[in-house]
Image (cartoon, rainbow, N blue to C red; front, side, top):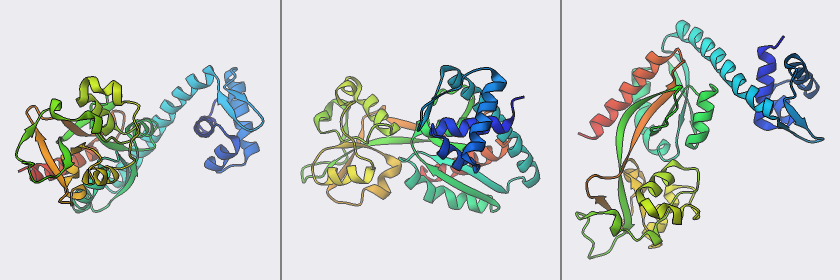
Length: 299
């Protein structure tokens, strides 16, 4: 008989592809984990792993089983979350993921609002790139995430929060009029500075660049907007900067910000959770708290 414990150990092993690391993550001995994986393979009558002396990898059957195991364990986590939520109402904790181009700018604004409205709720934060957040949300390692929409995932609920417009950041000069509006063809794309691959803001910038995306898709990128803004200030290039970042990242008179002609490039920021989650009422309250914050900011 297949057990939830076997599926959980298999999930740990699929993450690490190393028996020792998986056993440590599962808080059991390596022989015990190996035995449970063998019993899972025997119960299914399928080879799930290709083993070597130091590591392993999933077979095609293993990949298919992992997808189903993630779904089963995610539903089990939702069941446990439902029980906890039913007992604690809006207390307890929530695991919230946020993309790097939002976290440093949003969190100082929304966390006090959340603490005021939901004083018994503990917010546990995770900051990483969109693809990783989606994967962790789907397997219930996270309860909700804040990212740019749309994600186009059928099993995830997407709720828009606010519009974040893009500005052109360039080195200031005495003859530059910051009231002027720019268009994409005004940009010297040879000097465009980008975040490294994996950041959704990089992809959004390249999307706006249109046909230039193919040319710049393999270019080197910085790891943070702070680095890029220092490069802009020192005349090494230009970048497209989300408006939400301005107060934190633009404190240098050497940087000028220009708005684009309408329709201005932008991104839609949203709150996302699993449709199967039992905590929809909590997420909807968070949605209201965040939307109210940015409705005030934009008035």
